[in-house]
Length: 445
Image (cartoon, rainbow, N blue to C red):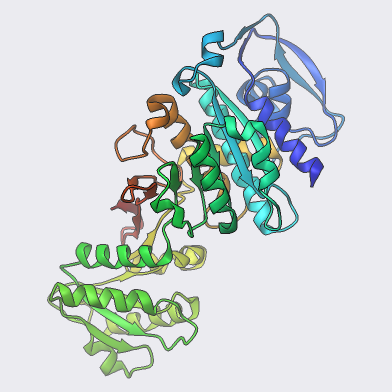
């Protein structure tokens, strides 16, 4: 664990070196065990793109560095651009390197650690992008596992000097970190934890994810507003393990407040009774009270029967974030039934910028991103670019509100609103719409 953490701290150090412009003569480097393209490029003060250009074989899909290989290194007369003394010691974060702290489980002992290692890697890649924009970053990272003690980390003088800290993962550390950042006037970005009562008292806190109750309330209200011209059809799927009853009950309350009629049917109803729940004079919006795949597949079958008997009936579906895990197998049905999935994130792997980042991740770290929702490297990349660009432009008064700058997220939209006199919570959310013309759109609200 210690050697792994040391490895990432070395990467962080490389990511913060001054920008180096390089003439185009060439020298060579013999690859040592565990070296990466990212580490080698930083070792010689060049970009990964320059390294790839000097070694055409690296552009091939699946290329991997091998111990003992000799590769070309673009080199020559170098000019180093370093921050001025006034930039280095200025109290204004807009005039110097931004000091970043990361307090997350950075290990490979369990899945939490592996996810946060990937998140941290995405953050480092964002810092590399920012360096090309002229934004300097000084990173300090600490391993904070679930059974760890945050106090020694906070005792490190480097922690108090940070302008912004990303962490923690676990809610049990939020209180101590909140108190620390309030005392030292740091910004604390809580990237995953949803339990943070300090959000309502500490103005220095940014919380990325809402609590399930808040998210349910917001989604139900937006659903009722967005689909007000539809006839809702709520299907009871008989799933005793489901936690989605809170959403359907909240949604029904919103419909009743707005005086919108709706139908309720059962997945096991007869064909005739099931079909009676649908109307012909407006589009129908189908909502299940479970997110499980077996009931979803069964519903697709029942809807197919309804369409065969009544071809003119229009059907759309409103689902759950978990349905994104079924896209590989159900995307055709998602398009067929105009599925809308509410989500705080969405990864369109067909976008060139996403594909490029995935390729760079593979080159830098010699492995693929984890197949997970969300993609944690993309999450770290989005968070770092958003907050560090914000600090560079607005200083410590940055509030993350909509319209501060035109960053298009790779995966995670961010739009913060202040919670009373306390901190700020991300209120960005979207509907991912699988249209019947086989395209996908995101509807932000």
